[in-house]
Image 1 (cartoon, rainbow, N blue to C red):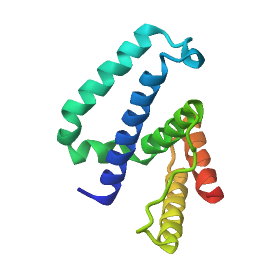
Image 2 (image 1 turned 120 degrees about the vertical axis):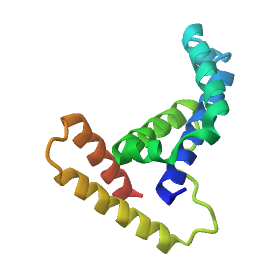
Image 3 (image 1 turned 180 degrees about the vertical axis):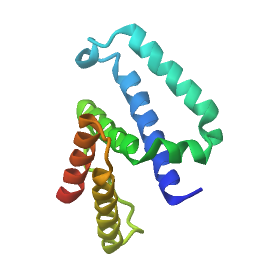
Image 4 (image 1 turned 45 degrees about the vertical axis):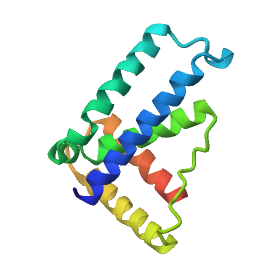
Length: 138
């Protein structure tokens, strides 16, 4: 599995983990506004993901592409904020900061290349620019 596919898989795992926390917290007063049908849908997503997570084809993850993963990051950050979790992702201690900076630089270059492609929708451009800004500020 390529590094980007592995990263995508980790993002999906993190999203499902946040869904689980949201479901647990849906019983609290703070989250009483969450519709029970929505909670059932989250249950459905969690159960289905658990069944298929090891069978997701690498090609599918690659086809989803960087813009989708960027949206996924934004969704994860928003869920973390709503659940009262630390929005800044915790980096593993084993990864040196220079490597992280290099990865940020590489991601920014990828975003710059994607922004040069014709035919992007305004929404796709906004997502890419938001992710670029997030990387620059980290």
